[in-house]
Amino acid sequence: MTFVSFVMPVRNEEAYLGASLQSLVDQTYPAADYEIIVVDGRSSDRTCEIIDQIRSNHPHVLRLDNPAGIVPTAMNIGIRAARGEVIIRADGHNIYPRDYAENCVTCLERTGADNVGGPWVTAAADDSLSARLVAAILSNPFGVGDSKFRTGKMEGWVDTVPFGAFRREVFARVGLYNEKLVRNQDNELNSRIRAAGGKIYLSPALTTRHQPVKNFSGLLKYAFRTCQWHIFTLRENKRSMGVRHLAPAAFLLGLLLLASVSLISSAARATLLLVLGGYLLIGFYFSMKSIRDGRWVVALVQPFATLLFHSAYGAGTLFGLVYLFKQPSLRPIRSGLPIQ
Image 1: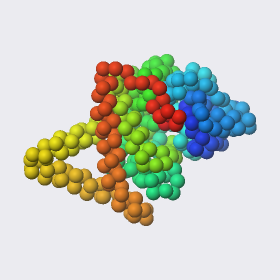
Image 2: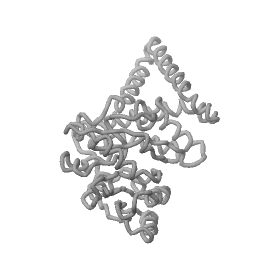
Image 3: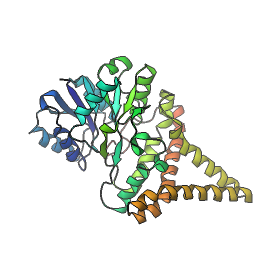
Image 4: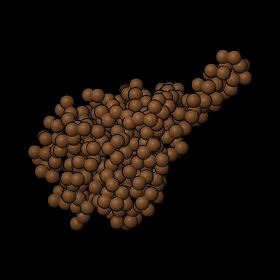
């Protein structure tokens, strides 16, 4: 039977890790045929305690140390230690169905792909308005564009998948994760796979449940800090990012230019109001799903919150222009908090 290695980078994930790790040890895949390698970035909360509690009853769970505290280094540590013919990149915010490992192996065999993954069902971290708003934005095409793994149930060949299941030999062919990239490392790796003639497949059979940050302010900070890496990622690999990654920056730049010119031009003021009005109308159209689900307050707030989200996303990208000329800091960008 194909031996499978889950590699899970974590750092200060006590709020989510227990349920996520438990879903991996509860797999239908025979315990003798898979391992779970949790690579900890020197957490300062109960993360290691939670891992060790689960390890005590499940010897196929391993804990390794990641002194760098960032995802790509953690993944490379885990891949080098892994025994599996299939390497599955796991995440501490995901809940996995019991047949996930089995379905990953089946999908790789059926499609011949080098990397396979599935859609996310984005679930609110709790019942608060803020958490439900975050989930609504991240599962809506108006919020995240054509990100197929976030908004659809399609099956077929794609450019990238989140947290993929890889054939081990692909790393010998294209190399490991780029440790210069605190963010966007999955996009960059998948770009190298495609450039080497490899294929990436998205299947609803690999759907997982994902819990994002709990509060809206946390989402804005996450968007701003993550998007600072877009320009540097393009500098490292120009094929690794798509148009949708740069669209919020272009939108924000257009708004700022219109706002500046509107100080002296009534035509610019009218255009600015027209653009913002059209944006909000489109936002209300896409928020209808929240109304159908009975979340009226979320639906009313969602277009304005999405505007703030896109602005934070765009501002981060524009700020990242400074990294055309230098390397961003490799220190964890949310000190004392999770790396994801």
